[in-house]
Image (cartoon, rainbow, N blue to C red; front, top):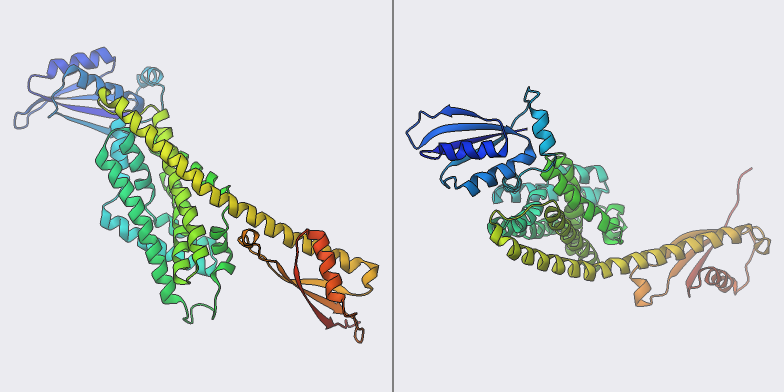
Length: 428
């Protein structure tokens, strides 16, 4: 429930009370004894869904613009009179005014925002280098990205250009700051005793997850945008939703920063693409869902203009996501192909170990060098195979070719095969 308190300017008392009567809400009038600008305070308990139509009624009736209307959340209202009101206003969303106020509150002061985001990025970068999912998730609790992501969409829908612009600037500037911070942290740590010598960041699972994204990554961003709007309009689970939005943005941005520190364009491009796709998807779903939820500008005359702007933004976002999704699709296909080749090689080696044609030889895969981007560059996969054999046994000169022929037949791909022969004995 909400408690709406109207500070009634001198001469507007009857106007306010008549409007409340027409709306069919209960109210109480308190005489105002302040310096004389207001003659009374009218207190009206209503469900959240009734706030917006009530405020619209006051404006339509001509309530002075310099009056105060205060909307507060009531923890508990003990009365059986609320049942009828709740039934009449059955919607669950909050009013436009509350939505705008919450969006403004969720977008913190610039200095606070930057400090929290930098701290979150530092922790996230450490989590990536340590391959610690728990550390990365913990860092997301600190990241204040939910506010700007939703503020931009709310500003567009309710026709508040300042709020929309601030949301966009905070998002773009914040993610740029995250990339720079991660690059700086990576540059400072690289080559120190805190990291293994010659560390290849692409071999770290948490980093690799962000540089080999697939089309399913869209669902995280789209779901985060939907959850963000629901949490904002219904005031539930904002902390957890904020974590989900941050997970979609900060770790990929930190990964792109590490790519800069390690001088790896591939890491920068793939992680940067993931950041952009997630950012645009969150904003797209927020815009659409807010409009579908019924939020409109305060001035009815502006609805058509705002709808036109909204439609243009949606088209731009959809086109941008579609273009970037081509990259995600390419990475998805490349990852699938490289994984398929590796799986087929492993399966064939197991078959060869059991094949009587190879006597007592045992085949072990040591390494398959075939990255997703190799699928498009035409780079030949390189396979290193360890073959265990009984002591003293010699293999024919064309043995490596025979192994390669078997593996190429299984994978359907031309391979470069290196065979390492090792004499093997097992104790009884």
